[in-house]
Image: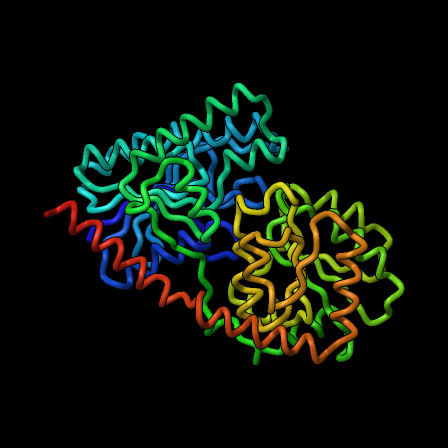
Length: 410
């Protein structure tokens, strides 16, 4: 089967955003399918194209058996609402001719991931010209999030953009997303139930395992064996409400054995570092290589997952999969009844968003209770094994792809 994947971010060698598209493409290629990817040069989360690539040139490369074409785009130094739109539009325009050339390759399925939703029309057009079905995967609802987080404003603009989004959603043969609540939202946007598919994020449970002690990181960071490490690892962007991490660290600065580690890069890191200035219980790390992810996650005694209240069911944080697989408890900020709260209940503590003192108290309570941390950790690992195993998730996805291609051919 020939599969064209259209995605803004494709970084199989890194953790974080773009990892899922990359891992999926490589898994499909190893399963015997021919996979072509149209994407951008690596630039995220630093918002700067890495030195071995160019933001103004096309580049074709072979990545683990996957044919990858990287297309130019404009990357703003300080992204804002309008700048993000121009950024996404620049990629949609530069990549459209490359996508249309896929028609001659005759894909059996065209698969596009949002973000960036700007690419959805190009994917649909390519599929129709190829006679192939087209699948839209929603990793997060970028339009809803942009308005709810204040990146875009105006009721008239909002109604227009949501109407365009609804129009586009209805024209895809399959629309998938990563959680039950997000699937419900897809239905509310006009997607037919028989075209809606759950395709959750996954984790390689063999490479992230509780038996990894994370001792390498703890030694490198100079932590004692009885220190309790509270870790945030992931993108440092605008949807996480990262300021609560600094507030909690400041409230708990007098706890001598509690250490905070904040690992990642992104537009929000500088602000978080400024908020943590002078705190002796906080350590910052850059984004770590994928091969050390298991050790990083298991060096934690507690995982921290802050979210802004207004982004609760618009995204399902991809970082949560690794946290659960590591067999460590999670403290998350989420309202009761949201998808994130449902998953974390029984695997950690769920506290209201944007309430630093409550968040800090939950961390302190877990830090003082090793038995409860262990019980929550066992439940977290069990959830990952039963619901998030990479091979199981991708085998189900492959079956859906084959079914879709078979319908189109019959």
